[in-house]
Length: 169
Image (cartoon, rainbow, N blue to C red; front, side):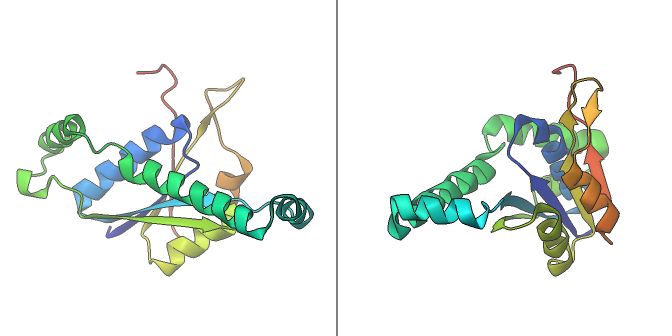
């Protein structure tokens, strides 16, 4: 396994999936691609907003949102405490200290249809695995939404869906 795509909506539900993707990347010294997709607004809605705000202001807002997403993705789990967790994890799984750092991490922010974009990104970057997080369900412990189902149905790349931490541990 050389390349792992972690698709996220930046909700807390994705933390378990993020941890899983990072642990796999450390184990296999794989590159992790962090993907966030900005769903496009319907054309008539976007057109109205642009008309109200103006093209320049609309572009400022979308660039600001992209910057916030990038900060969120790059800032995840980079503290000294996390490095200690990584080293402890590596001891548990038998990975030597020299191998305990992430090989690399790439951030991709895209817009478009969620299912199509995830599949296209995985294929374009020749990923060996797609990792996604389930969400907490109302009646059931975990819920798999339409996006995850669509990726699982259409992807030629294996997909792992990681359940949420139900008990908050």
